[in-house]
Length: 507
Image (cartoon, rainbow, N blue to C red; front, side):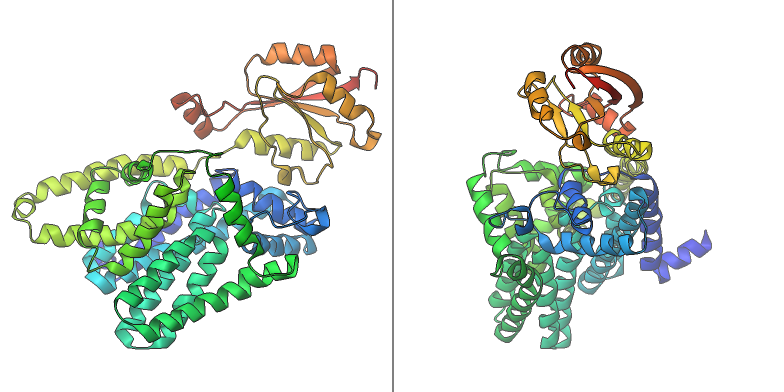
């Protein structure tokens, strides 16, 4: 215990990083699967398919795409290179490759902790820096999200590095740091296009502070790095720079009401809940209270937050890049407020009680979520079929709903030219017609029934209209997905029932 106290006083960052590493390693090992659509299908499926000479999402000209679709080719391209190396080394186990991917992201995410600590120490000293570091290390959502392929998380270290470089440029009077800041911001843009609002905020701060040379050097770094990353890739693929970026803008403007639209104040509730009240309220209060003196933290995050609050299409993960800035600025502002507020100075036990409540509420979800296997049924279903070794292709039976859940073919180990499906819109008759003219090599020999809803009735109907099938196995959903379904039935229960097709009527 004395050694622990000594390290907390003398080397707090090392202790904080070790704590964060432990829980991120738990997530590397146990938090298999994927969290959202984008972190798997837009990154892993695309990158692996390119490495295999395919183009799963049909993004590229070689697949017949006539123009850019507004996708991030830079971050996906990094995964393509990794999977290509794995292919060269004959490292072909899908889960094994994903352990390496999660391990890299876990290590990379510790930069969020380290940089946030350094920024806080520079602005407010060790006491505040320690609290900022331990929060970003052990917030209940951080370990699990840190190992996901989310561009919203991966861009954060580059935004924090930009902040740190600008602070160093100001304190050490070296314009070269502004250039480094610009280069880092350019990489953030190449990973997450909306980082442009952070970049605009950084630039505006330099202009407001009349640091004209610094602003010019910063802007040069941004443009140069963006050209070397996103611009060069798009030029190679489409013949002109930033093709995907402009397509991304056009697509989102045209479809801004076609996805999840929420009220303008949604992200206030997201931050208030994710950061756990009453600590979240303390952080938000401190962040806003000291906005002027911490303008470099406040303005970029505020512009980013304002844009996402204004834009109709909203998802909780979109706001993740703001969180470290709110925690850093909020902790600085709150600590300074408490030090000069007689009410709080007289009630240290109340503040201590808030923190005891916070860590009590935060710790159990952190351990549970860090070890949760998300989308287990989908991943394990594909792994099961891969291990069977005889899969040509398969049918997704989802006749109880309008659409079907996409299977993560990365875990299947090969790319069937067609995956068939049955929904309320695609009947058994139309499916039979679609399959009848296809060669034997792409005739489905397995059918996967999604969800438990009327599954026995659906199995019998499939036999009646399609052909004889026999049960093979059931893949159960993971505990986290089951809990989410229990809390909100909108989250589908996704047990997967796998049957082998013995023969097809008329086949």
